[in-house]
Every structure is written in C-alpha cells, then in structure tokens.
Length: 144
Image (cartoon, rainbow, N blue to C red; front, side, top):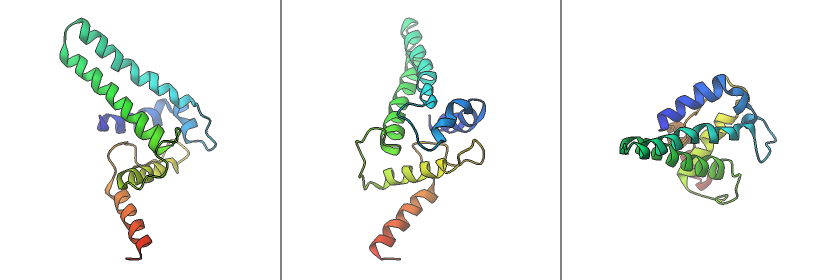
C-alpha cells in the first residue's frame, strides 16, 4: 500500500486533483479542508471491495478492501493525529520513528505548490530523515 500511496500522492493529489489537495499545503489551515474529501474518495473502493467480496464470497476481494481500510486507519492515525496533530494525542513524543515521519512530512510541506515536492509516502521514511534525527539527537547530547 505504501507504493500505491506514494504514486497516488505524487501523481493524483499533486496532479489532476491538486485543486482538492492544494489547501492542505496552504498556511493557516482550518479544521476541515477540501483535502479531507480524499477520505471518501479512498474509502469508497475499500467499502466496495468488502461489500462485493462478501456478496460473491470472494475472500481475496474482501482482503483487498480490508487492506485499503486498514491503511486508511493508519493514514488517519499517522497523518492527521501524529504528523499534523489535528487531535492532540501524541504531541510530545520522543520516538525516533515519529520524529522522522514528522521531519519528512515537514519537508514535503515546505513546497506550497504542486511541483518540486519530496517525500510523498507516509509510513516509510527515507534514510536522510533518519540521519537528520540522529544528528539532531547527537548535537543535543554534545557528541558531535
């Protein structure tokens, strides 16, 4: 699912559906954005696979729908709760993984337009962001 997420984010959300995603990159965000419509856009195939798979007793179609749905839950928790802190549940985490995904997403959002973006995935973090977190920790300890 991460590869599909990366592709969809880069070529759909930063492509022909930029008009829906654009407000997500704008400063001064409201609680709700046009970007939130992607919840319904991505939830629909998951629901459809689960429903049709159950009707046809096709476990593999249900599994695809369940995978899409579980990734949607992960997206909500990682993107909306941990990264953007739309809900104040994990605001002071010292976890390296959380710091790395927040750093990668911050670098993604430094681009306010649809071109020249970076870090389009969600759960997998490039090595350069892990290295930056490690460097920051070492600097704080005075090791560097």
